[in-house]
Image (tube, one colour):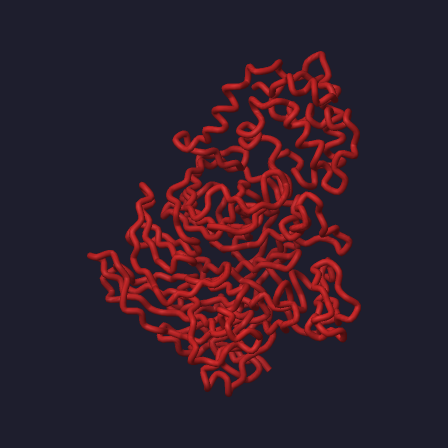
Length: 619
């Protein structure tokens, strides 16, 4: 039984209207057509996680690892620490100081100069988590809380933490932890499933479908809040108009979630969310009070594509005798098709990305770190983009912007006029060797401020996986400049010295030469073997790096043709690199050069690396 009370915001209990978008494989995302200038505003932040534009026209940032809330001047990047919360405990990669919500009355002479923050902490007075077997583990008594902090405008500091709610699950994976102030005056908070059922937690049952009992709520035992979104009064109590689910009213607003790291409200009160999928189907959702979003029975739509729920915790063979695999499920592990689940699921508004069941999830280019090359993009935040008429970026009206971790990109999901359905196709902007964690918009909505992770695995520009990030612990600024190719050119003051040095060596060898016929053969070979990874325009790369545009200019112009030939030869196609034949690889290089504006001549590009070393890519 599910009973719904009347909400002040009707949008939060009204179902999504209109069609949803089952976006196909990653190469179905199109390259955006807006041009941006990019610069690094500041760096040295210890794991920036939440970034938001404050009423003081500064950026407010939580530092997940550092345990600080820091204010950053968007003009010159200077930083001021507002508070260092010593209680914050960040033992792993997805815990510490997480979400932050600024009271709408902050600095408006309302008496509500408050900031709300969520973080993980250690409390040994509470029973240790039963899923942690080692009593000395830093996660044995790790919990999450939300506090209210008071802001002193004169000093620029936060102090006097007041506990709103404490003792929520603190986990070694998938904490989620996004916190938002709703237009209804309530706090909304996300808690992930803890990464159960996978990797090091593979024999621990996923509890995203488990709901709190009346006794647990009475005892303030929040263990069942895993895999949920919560709705709280500002004093931490349960709102009277929260949904009653299976006879129990709690903080739980929605359930059946995996790792919901992004939530944001549209101007009409619609609550949008982004959620990470396992190998496919990162989701973009509209959250409706009381609804079930399917995990772990369903990811994306109930379509039986590339996903089966595997209950490793119920395997007939003891876990100690099994080896977990994301690719191959042991025969002793019970499985369930998505369509076999009888439950009611709220379908996503869109997926990033849905692929057939025969998709090959093993990619040699990833060097054994296959998940970087999977169709999921690891959505990390959600920004509703609804500028006022005449403001913002032209053509971006009624959109959702999603940052991603795996290949450092921003995706734009166009919406219908009412904001309730996807109007596709999904657009992709930028690519970098950064993990983009969160985004804030300038008041005119023409500049995006993006926080980057300080560490972690990322898809490299060469198509593999790496741990070296371009701008770790930084805030990047993307400023709209007009129509273009969807790239983000570095600001003149931020130009990479390496690119300048490369250009200065352009005269080191003879200019590359190729024929129009050779480039035409190269296009045929590219369309047959390379387009799915590098995009039809060589810019909208999904797995490999862009082969045209600013990235090509910076990396290859001025370099030996042999370097580009070797790169193409040794990586394309990823399933069988080097197998197309030397002449075909020379044809591919000729096509890449032609797309980048080099003119064809009378002499074919040789398929001999020793000769290519004496040629230089000159524009």
